[in-house]
Image 1 (tube, rainbow, N blue to C red):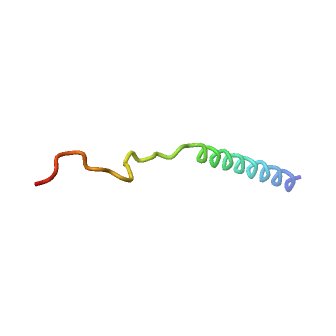
Image 2 (cartoon, helix red, strand yellow; image 1 turned 45 degrees about the horizontal axis):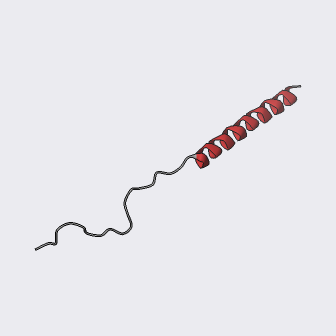
Amino acid sequence: MRRLLAAAVTAALATALAVGTALGIAAALRTTPEQPNTPLISYDTGRPAR
């Protein structure tokens, strides 16, 4: 009976850990990364340098 209880507790903990990991990965994939607001190409539009 003790082995059955230990196996059940171990299986329950493993299941909880797997579900938590899956939810964490899904949440991480759902977030959008911050995109920098810097252009790749910029043109000088001010006064010309002397």
